[in-house]
Image (cartoon, rainbow, N blue to C red; front, side):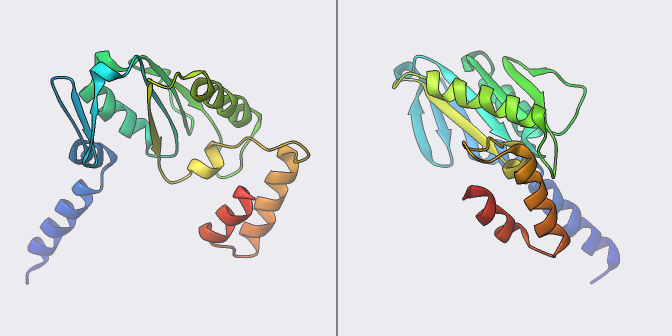
Length: 172
């Protein structure tokens, strides 16, 4: 097999892994029928559609979702690493830190929580999560400070903890 064929295979594989391609493959809208990963939603039965999420690929995911759903999206918040972009349609882009959360991360995460808590039973919430989401969607519970969470994460990372171990500690 030649190098050029291997390069073509690699390019095709990488293109399929792009966040935009993954959203396009998983989400379709035909009339009022929204399909997400095989699950159908009749948008006529949902008063509002909210989009929330966090992670390094979430901005690209939100752009593609907005291209598909556009006018159907009521509002939303996504937490992503620093970028110049402030909005994707009606979705507010919040700049948060990675791999160590900061005060902006906590404030942004509270907005997402408030958005989800304010949703009515007939509202549809679409959540976009990608790598880095556990850091960019941080809201320490009572008795746990942001600084304590950051210090513990740093210690675990410097001692070689993998992402599975880090996320196990973070969720507890």
